[in-house]
Image 1 (tube, helix red, strand yellow):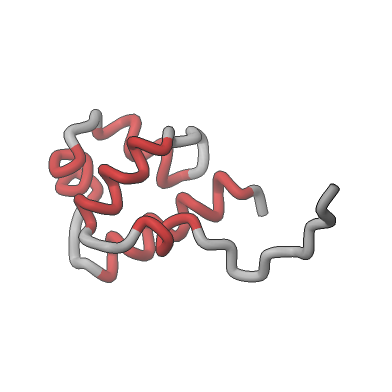
Image 2: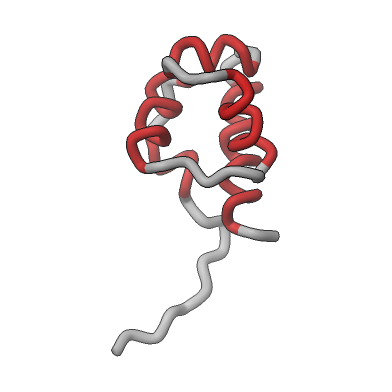
Length: 77
């Protein structure tokens, strides 16, 4: 699964857990519904500022939206 799709899935899960519609989150975040929908579906990559606004709109920590479930070990250097 692509990272973009995984972030979209985490945003969707947080939105549903908060009992919000896509329209409500888009409105709270001050963004276009269509763009929000593309982010949630994994078809668009949100900018960091957009992720902050979405986290605030859903009332969750930013880390909840971007944390990898099983991050692989990455070699340094």
